Image 1 (cartoon, one colour):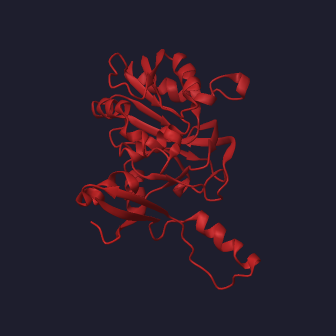
Image 2: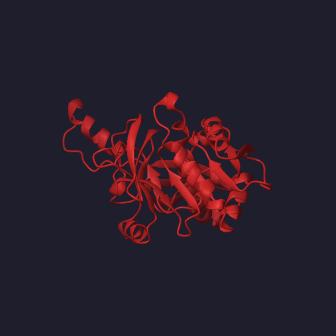
Image 3: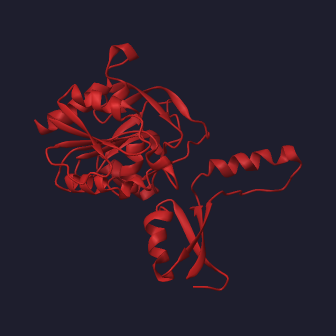
Length: 209
Length: 78
């Protein structure tokens, strides 16, 4: 598996993402002005504050040359993983349904949360964000639930931001673009408490094997 | 050259926690009877071609899924 990890001005989690990807293949950074993703099989759009999050989180990053290339990769079925700010970028780009709004309590949350994946398995992964409240109109929520596009929910009672229906992560209709607010790349080493994040990267790597 | 002001606000029905926080602070300052506070953004700009402003708003200045926008001309231009 050859991963590419995007890097925008203002990204801050690209190094952890690079490390996490490196545990299930090769990985390199892709600068936001790069238009050529040749040799890259899967992309991570990492967390941080791309372009300072000016206007709205992810609103400006979606117009970068690298994101044009990511949209093409996604259209061809290539796996794309957006984490935190990367999730916001993918929603702004229309590659994923919905939007991320200011946390309900207006506080930046930074803590370990329990997630439940679409198979009912639990993962312990940290969140750290101020704008992570997943929102979509009711009919869109009904539709993504009916189509099995909810990939992760916060475990009961652990919703840190007021997300609709406890949604922490969604996939596109084709199933190859995944976005989530929690940070699997920060949960890949026992040193930091949990290695559950590895499962996210490994499952994407397996999908291409 | 047209000067314009774009007002962007959260759509009705979407919780606006900033507005709520401001609303809750008002009674402590002696301002009673104020409700439904909603906080949005205002963008002023100059455009050679004002016809393209709605498209610009839909693509960048506002996220049409969560926000409504209004374009006002300034100084009678555009």
